Image (cartoon, rainbow, N blue to C red; front, top):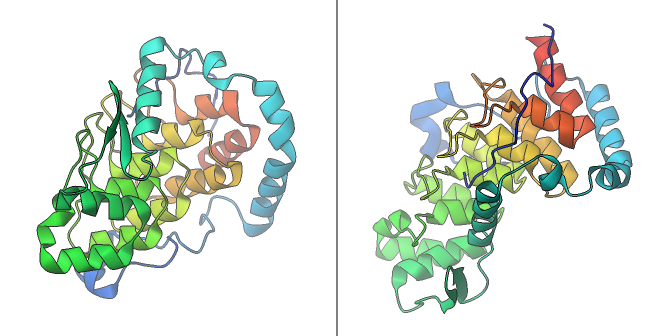
Length: 278
């Protein structure tokens, strides 16, 4: 299949928009929709030798690629609204201690509120605290913050794999959306948290969910500025998901391949390999 990686032109629209399997009990009723992506080779996409070569290439290119890219967001032509949305999303994913940032400055979290305590425990990966609080009130798993982030979102973007599993086992909604329309998969993908991505995909989440700004998890993963090897594995896991729409266009008309062409030679090769196999 011939692919033109530059066929989608225009500014990139990036808005806020797992390792081990989840427990047998939690997944017993949905085995047919689940997949094992935690052992790390994309079946039929690239073989193990090719994967090693791509990873070596990825590491070797890091410094040169970063120098060539300069200000990636600027080169990709993101408009001010999109940049502000990315900034909001990143800030919402960087809670610190008992403080959180909002539009007017720094506000103390209300740690007297048990739901905030539960959200913070998820954010910090404090599984013992989560278990204890769930035993008191199972509905804590449905808590949300002012931006509609759930405990599962917070555990996912902070890469707390065991907390993610625990929350899923206790009824957390893996398709919950923030005020920007981000699913938990969007949050994990944007931060390059591939082990969490694997757990979510194994749980049967919708890999093709789109944010309010019409962004797919692949758009967010390809555009991620996190550790390059983590991003590589995140993209690879997403490509392995059954039914993934690799040709999906953002609101500005960019496909993941078009984004990769501008941001990463290795991701471009990885996504191109997918098209060659289908």
